[in-house]
Length: 137
Length: 137
Length: 137
Image (cartoon, rainbow over all chains, first blue to last red; front, side):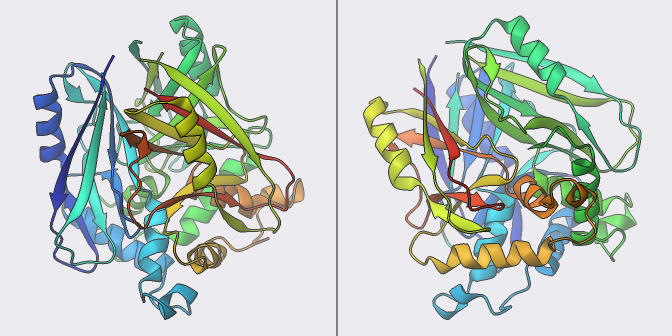
């Protein structure tokens, strides 16, 4: 068994944004040649996150951002806002989490029909959000 | 080292429901014969999720559903409701997440005394919710 | 490829607390000698969780606790409170989750500049919170 790490960079364009990264992850998986194993997708940022959700309707991402904004109100007397003014982004990142792990079967991610992989930006726009793709074969 | 994938189907019976899947996952682990490794439990659906929590009191699941309902109000002007009317289910699935990874030691999941594995249904009832069990040995 | 499990114990000192466990996890990784792989950090408790977030400002943890307290109000007629009086802790643990998986590169966790690993205590203080570190090489 082997472990291959790959990575790519995403440019984000809004303060809060949900960006489909499935095609890039699937391309990296295809070039790895791995047929059976597990894929961990990880973002090394404290104000971004990785999630899996529906791909067909782009409003799913809009709704997720709106829901998190209701749960974690911006500038709600957060202490960290005195330093960086982005406490809500950190809290949202902790709630969604920095990684997901997906089985690989027959060279493909076992995503369901309605599942794609998304980078969640909570403190953008940023020019370089990194995504690591770690493939265990 | 090897990677074995197994799967099973769960029927859900309510719109929101938390169902203990620990016995089935443990049976699949036992039949795999793996003694040391990691187990990823993954659901390939965008309106369901996997979580770990207490097993002894079934009201833990009732409380989790009630708490998520307060955080993510049904039909709260979500855009996706215009298409599928299940936006809240998608948001809850993103908050809880589609997978968990658990170490395997001496042929057993290293679940704590008060931990079991649960499938969270947020848009049921459904006849066939799939659960994938990916075992790295 | 091999799978090594290690563990350690954390004493918590408050009812809700976020404790940096990065140095201990990095020490265990260093003693494992693993250079390339994946590290899963898992807590086998139903009222604690593992998260990744900023390390520089300790108020990030204070804000996360405050935000979760707003989302999941203590003693909000939770059914489990009749048994253990700690339902909110269980719900918070389910939202944050019991584990994270991080790629290992060149013998180091691929944590970002602003990322550290934290144990979240939601029902403390407790003398012995266990953390499992499962290293796949």
